[in-house]
Amino acid sequence: MQTSLLNNSNSGGAASAGSGASITGNSAAETKDMFTKLLVAQIKNQDPLSPTDPSQFINQLTQLSQTESLQNLSTLTSANASVLQSMQVLAMGAQVGSDVLVSATSVSLDKSKVGGEITLGNASAKTTLVLTGDDGVKHNVSLGTQPAGVVPFAIDPSALGLPAGSYKMTVETSSKDTPTIAVSGRLNSVRMAGAGSVALNVANVGAVTPSDIIAFNGKSASATQSSL
Image (cartoon, rainbow, N blue to C red; front, side, top):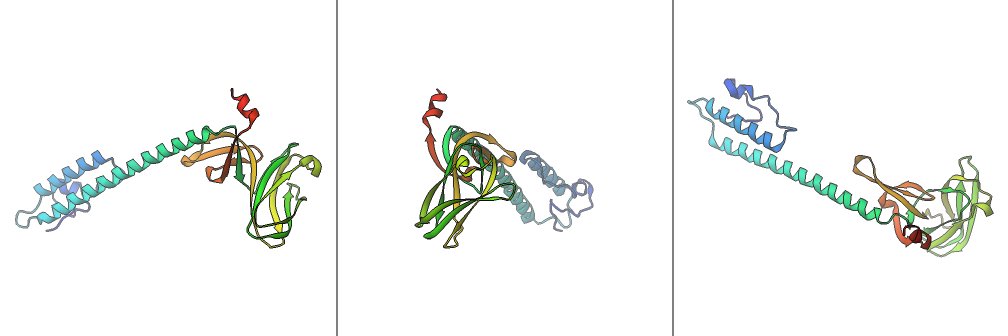
């Protein structure tokens, strides 16, 4: 007669009582204690005329060991993730006040100039940064003929007659590329967000993730003096 602690069909006494028990969700200590009690009950209630093959007990003990190892690994992984996340927050927090370059598809404008850059995969005879407001009106910033590579740009709201607000950004090129756009701004804050993520707030852009940061350009003189 072969039995299993995880699915025991024996109708005798304590072994039957434990047949429906589940070890899922228990702590390692609780699981081990329950498993030991079930094993003892199974040995006591086995049929003397048809005893359980000892190899079955060995297999079940092996299952317990594997379960404990997986639970310990899961706990260790969660702890390491928490430590790494805390280290990331501390590292990012030390950069608050720094000027950063952020990958973005929109920009928030007031009266101040905003700089940034696009990265062209191919040369473009005519390059245009297109800003689209919430009203759907498009405003073009001509960047002229540009070689492949990084192309800096500057947005002057006053010169372009742009009211304060949020604008979507796209780039039109003669090569029909869809280059990436990055905006310069000051890192204002770092905080823990939901689901264990880290949220950054960058001037001219808003909320971003650490992976959106392309470069840290250091703190400006005014930011350094204000922190003293």
